[in-house]
Amino acid sequence: MPLGDRVPGCQIDDVPYTPSPDLAAMRLEDISAAVAARRLAPLEQWNPVETGTSNMRIARDGRWWHEGGIIHRPAMVRSFSALLRLDEDGFWLVMPHQKLSIIVEDAPFIATDVVALDEAGEQVLAFRTNTDELVIADAAHPITAHGDPDTPALYVLVRDRLEARLDRSTYTQLATMAMDNGSDPLAIVSRGVTFSLLPGT
Image (tube, rainbow, N blue to C red; front, side, top):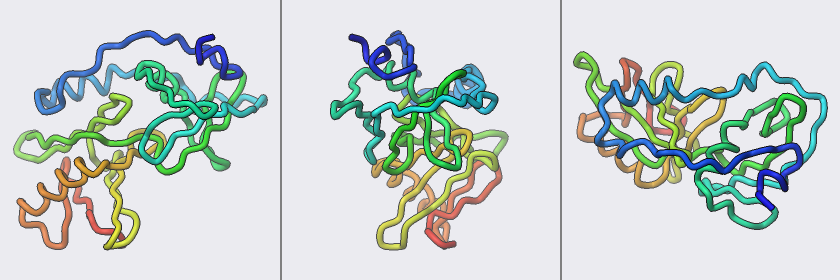
């Protein structure tokens, strides 16, 4: 039985999708167009009374689990991720007539790549997540540092209070950019906004 039929209330078709090209090969206008083309349901307008549990979990490493098994199909994970909403009482998969709780161990997304581009002489940072979403860091999508100086963690806001935690490779790329720019204390600029890469600053 398809997973979408086994999760109560969810009717998810495992429709293949075409991933975006390699991030490093994309121009800023291509990334902006891809962000604009990602049409999501109006989750903020849906307030279903009926609630339940999805028996799903997003692990700290970004992998999705259902009833003890990993969901391996990227298209299915991407479809479920489009239903994610963070409310005051936790994370939910939201549909018009029902919302299902989901456990999120850290952030719901993982930023797996970053590229620095030029926009009229200003640096612009674009990230790709493990669900193949693209996000440009700016005032509306800030980069934040959590943890402590010994074990820092960086996050970028993807949408609607949902963050992506930078994986080790992406964190290293970003820190290297900041050091190459001579930033002290360590910080990075995107679309004219300066983001500290150090927790508590």
